[in-house]
Length: 159
Image (cartoon, rainbow, N blue to C red; front, side, top):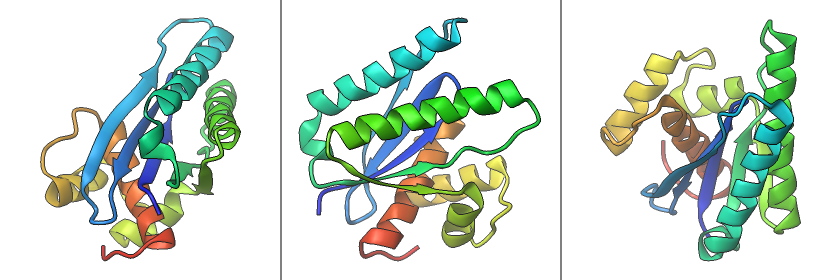
């Protein structure tokens, strides 16, 4: 088994964190596009992610990726846009023969933080206690916890 990759997507980005079997952070990065054109942004993020995989293949081969499922929000357009980015990232994982598992936010929060309704602040606090103050953006803390959930689910670990 390779590494454990946690992915947290928004309408403009895919943040990802790679953990080793000892729960150490190997890599934190993101693919992002802030253009106003939704389709251009989607294609840019997905292309960046695919290029990243191809350039860092040693991190992705024999690894398991865990990606957060879309969260339904009141703004339907935003929900659709986020869902498209998630689907695009999944497609790139599939095209590169990388195993992935989608997980609902309440499930990973419950299993990792023992609170399915954990707030952003609680997630960041947990992540900083576990890995230190290395998270320059909240989405990295989320991705690290999603990766940890994958490690718990598919590897051997303790939370």
